[in-house]
Amino acid sequence: MRGGVAAVGQALMISGLYPLVPHAVRAVGRTQMGPRPWRSALAEWGVAAALSALRPAGFLPLPGGRGARGPRPIIVLHGYAMNRANFLPLAYRLARAGLGPIYGFEYWTLGRVAAGARQLGWFVDEVRAATGAAEVDVIGHSMGGVVGRYYVALAHGDGAVKNLITLGSPHGGTDLSAVGIGHPARELLLGSALVERLAAAPPPRTTRITAIWSRADALVPGAWQAPLPGAEIIVYDDLGHVALLGSRRVAGEIATRLGR
Image 1 (cartoon, rainbow, N blue to C red):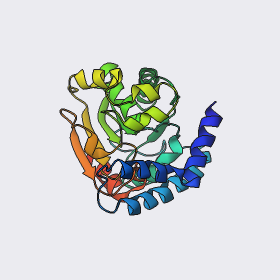
Image 2 (cartoon, rainbow, N blue to C red; image 1 turned 60 degrees about the vertical axis):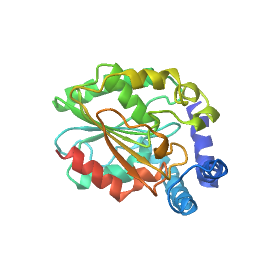
Image 3 (tube, helix red, strand yellow; image 1 turned 90 degrees about the horizontal axis):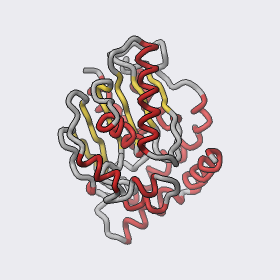
Image 4 (cartoon, rainbow, N blue to C red; image 1 turned 135 degrees about the vertical axis):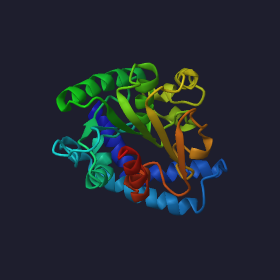
């Protein structure tokens, strides 16, 4: 099953069906996608195809592994139908900035967000025990950011996580979730029970949340996402959903926050 999901994702990205089809849907719907939306779409295609080709590297450790000595360990969470190889460019830049060690967390993206958050909690405990760190930082892309937020807000992760940074995450849901399969097709939909439950949760007491979005993101348009209470919000005009992971600007913003 995992292999089938990966194969479909690879085919969509390499063929260009993603991101061109979602951008076409947004164009028909006259969604505000920032300046020069088709230029952003082509750039997104290039980044998505490149990261898709790197997928086999997900079996290898990420840059900034166990020899790194930053303020705290960093755990990265991939998005729907992806794997930790998507974080290779970002992990490389964070390691160059002296941050880490960096650990990739893998979870079943067709399952429930709550199940992924529960497994993340176990992984956080393992990393803290192995490193002796009191806290970790978590970076989640797309669905991974929602898993991280669920862990912090509803699964006792507040306090174990110093910084939660989300990239293109559908905290308020996304209409395109309806074309997916598995539990996320329902849970990440606009107005879903999960979205409402997270919206009703109080802001974390100690975990700092930074939500990064882009208006040029065709899967999770940043302009549609309501601000998260207590979170720092950063919105770009020109980065696609996957391009957020490959951006030097985004890496710089993340490094600044995790270096504190």
